[in-house]
Length: 524
Image (cartoon, rainbow, N blue to C red; front, top):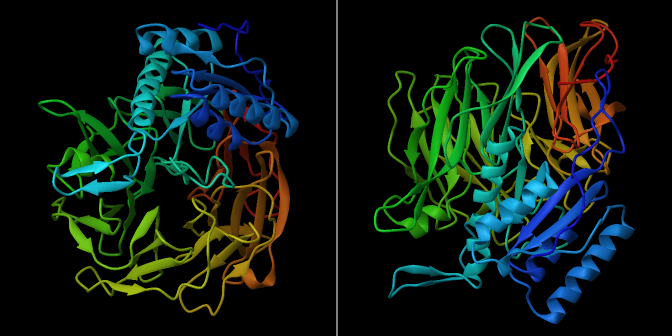
């Protein structure tokens, strides 16, 4: 087994700053050189890449990986050494864990453990996959990384690249699990909490006191075999709801994948137990494993709606009423969709769903009038987003995205004749924001985006008037995940980022009412 001498430790920024130019230590773990090459090509500048392959593959595949590593070096990545082949040992999982101990990565890239089928064998009742060994290697990788995170006590962030994704897409756009947005949230007691998915489960940082600079964490929250994705939704009472996918062993062999839900009622206190919402395709281990990642929203009546793409590539949903009772899974018939959904709550308190189409660049929208109304499908949405870039806008009923042709952020809402460009075409991934930000007596909406090297930028426009223009400014830090923003009930705006070394970075606005300057960043 190949070994390379390195402690793998990313440089840490000093308190009071969040370092720029720090390389993310990324371990690419794949079944073989061909899969590894695809994952390497999705990496942008600012990463130090180490490759672990289960199998050695053919001579041509190894040559393709070497070319991909060479191209990565030329676009600004570090490539300290060649690939290691862990399949030379009998126990692949143990060999991967030994390599991870040596490399000590904070970021891991692997393949999709539950790839979408290439076909379906109706007689056998099972999906057909082109390369099932890719999923098996991804599961070995996830198990090894979970073990390494549990052993080291340090968060390790995992990205699973979707099989057969367009190689022109970056890692964020080609991910099996969508990037978490709105992961910084204010609790019922006024303290902020940051939630992020990691290899071993959800990690949490909690502010020690409202508007203070002291934080507790990172703390690994209980949640066995959660997959590395997370949806974070705050309800009207200030309680934080988390949604994830959980893998469970099935009697007789194999696994089921189910949607699970937990709630934080008090900042810093234990979550409720993870409650299973099942699957849109229950009782079938093959179909449940291919379900999409859940998204959710609260309607004006206090209902909690959870949506997910089902095995047939349409949308299913459940609703929890204010008294806690759940409906069964219902099916929204219509256009087949990709695993790229976002919910938006309108000013009337109605939850709407946007989804990117599976077989085209179009977007479809579902809406209804009131909790008991019939869902209406709208295929006339006038924008085409970069995959993985849609998110709820800062104002009710609005949706943010990056334009597929220009990469420029845009905003749209029903009734607008066309989407409005927001400027700042650099970077990738979804945007986020906050509303009700007072600037010299005027109310502004804040938008946060990532730049080409992960540089965070903050934009602002007068509420209700994005057509009047957005003023962008450098936020003063880089983030390896989409930056987050929250406006507290007292009007304080706080930004959050994740450093290349996997640490939480925080910046507070200098004033509640004037200017958009922020204090120096500090790391937790």
